[in-house]
Amino acid sequence: MADYIQNKKAYFDYEFLEQYEAGVVLHGYEVKAIRAGKASLNGAYVIIRGGEAFLVNASVTAFQVANTPKSYDPERARKLLLSRKQLDELETGSEKQGLTIVALKWYNNKRTIKLGIALARGKKQADKRQTLKDRDNKREIDRILKSQ
Image 1 (cartoon, rainbow, N blue to C red):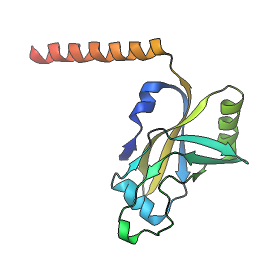
Image 2: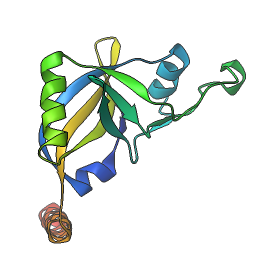
Image 3: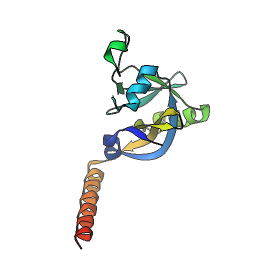
């Protein structure tokens, strides 16, 4: 299982409560672009409308500009394929508990491209500082152990 694109900012800004795997309705040239790494999940999130989930603010640039249709919108809302049970869990979490549904990464599962999403709660500023402090401490420990 190869990760194509990751939303590194989401790992810093949010605390993940539950993670899901979703299929995505894509065009062929979008699949090629994601596999080539020409996509971005920065600021991407999921909304639920009419019992269906959509990925918003994810950018997939054209793989070959000459071969893409002129009407192609790289930031269009893409429909996610989830089970009814998962949709209900996400909907109750986002509406009733005030949580956010964040896009984490594009990856492949056998031959299909999947989107990793998570029900997340935003971190407070103090939590972010603690994360940075822990990361620096770990880096320093690794440096000391490596030099010995």
